[in-house]
View 1 (cartoon, each protein chain N blue to C red):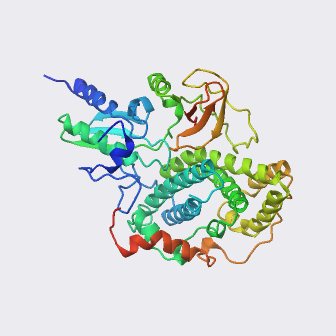
View 2 (view 1 turned 30 degrees about the vertical axis):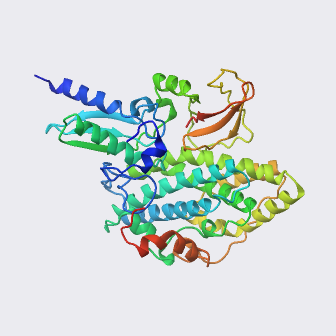
View 3 (view 1 turned 135 degrees about the vertical axis):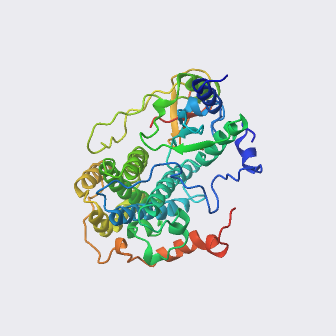
Length: 171
Length: 275
């Protein structure tokens, strides 16, 4: 007999394996967008997802993928809830997620900025972060654009191996 | 779907009818969020506030998208489109919030596609034509500075949905303002031609400040940012000479109607269309 605890753990394992539509080397759990999986008293599986960016066009796809996988695993009642608070931060990308990004040639983010209360200061020409090249490991890299093919990434290039690469921005 | 190839998966049929970025009738962006309005929050005021902020974002996103295929470099095109996408996301959340607050139950499409220009509450600064790159970037600097200040304050709004949308937006707007500020410095401090054009842009945006500050008076914070940027750029501070009228009251320039006609045309000609 399967206990409720085992059942919710199984549901979590199914949901956490769903790949991100835009960074398919990461699961939604690696990316930190799967915030929780619970089971209600009537046996409904509730999975909570949070968007990375307000305009992330993959949210509907993620919701549908998680629901489809859970239904496919035999859960008849599935509900996906959007969680907006607290907002997603790149700090939620797991160590495993960071490793997978590097393996796929994408530099993982550094620590997200910590902000004090009050106005957000504008720093003109801030000191650039050192981003190691995910291919050759060299630290001699430069930002070519703070915006890239998806909201969450910036474009860099390595001066050592000359390869361009993407970098997940800290936010 | 093909998990390992995002573009192939876009072209595949979806049993569940999910789509990415086109058409009408998308799933509610507040799907599964508790949208109960807390006791003591004025629902009319909350809805109006959400619509005005959503309209600023939607109209700005449309103008930013117009730069696609026209920006000086591919990287800038991608940056402007990304900024527009963030704003579009903010607009969707805010429209959804308004529809569950004002008693009409309208969805995001009803606000975006089926209101006429006089029903829009965006500031006129957002709807002015893009002009040159200098004008677009100076405008983006002003709008993102004001919105960032306002969203910072709204992060502690008594409505938890608006507060959460704002807290998320703060992170995005910080990137937008940074991008705009660095470009304004680069253009102002660049060639005589880029300096001249950027200086002109600063003069052109100044008359439109008033509308921003009636909704949320962030003039000190915005002025501090503009002072910092104009000093670094070798540009004069804008001199504020208010224009009569206000986009917040539905009084728009002649430029909003053609923008909306383009935005709304397909949705109105083919109600319920997906593409």
